[in-house]
Amino acid sequence: MWEEFKSFISRGNVIDLAVGIIVGAAFTGIVNSLVNDLIMPPIGYLMGGIDFSSYFVALNGEHYANLKAAQDAGAATINYGVFINVVIRFFIVAGAVFLLVKQVNRFRTKAASAPPRQEVLLEEIRDLLKAKAEG
Image (cartoon, rainbow, N blue to C red; front, side, top):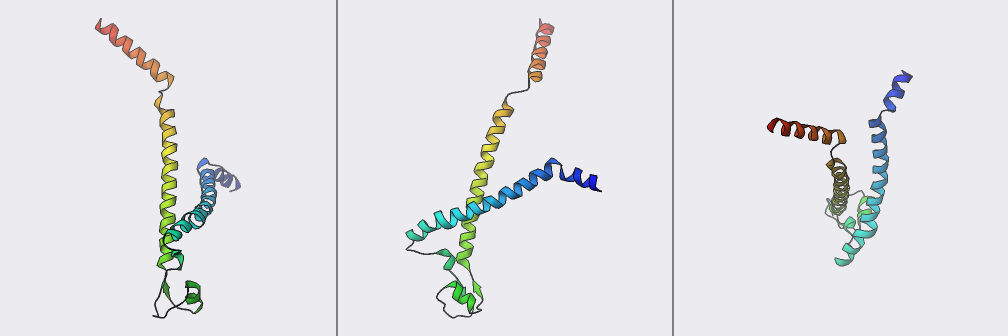
């Protein structure tokens, strides 16, 4: 059983998956900081100091100063401002992943554009045989 576990864990796919999860977790922290610290403050400033995360509707009909006060009072709330922040984060992550995949595909295309040497030689042999048969 130990040998089977070592074989499983040492497969390339498992290692790649583990690295992807670790990098993804770190990337999440970067995206959260990007949204909360760099993107949302200017948007809030342009909209008159509005912080999206403080937008909510208390379902009991009462007015609360902020979301924390409503939650502390035990009121059920619809936190649509938090949802707006999550949507913005999603688009940032999707854009970053798109740019990353686009660059990786561009590098792969460059590497794959030159055919292997043996293919080139086989094509030359084919062309010589074809020319010999025609002439």
